[in-house]
Amino acid sequence: MNLVSNPGWTEEDRKASLAFRRLEEELCIFDRTQEVIARYEDSLQILSCRDALSRYDCQPTPSQEGSCKVP
Image (cartoon, rainbow, N blue to C red):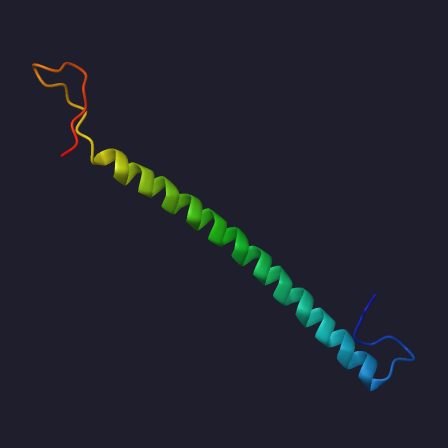
């Protein structure tokens, strides 16, 4: 069904149909953007955890085998 040019529609109907189609496209773009943001936030969380873990030196010292030191 072509929403923009159905027989019997007025110019106002066509404008409303075009506006609705644009809104649908904008919502689709918004949904995809939200997905990208969620993936980006997940990546940031992973990087943040890696950064926090990298602050610990987990090399065993002779007197404390297996312990971790905070620099």
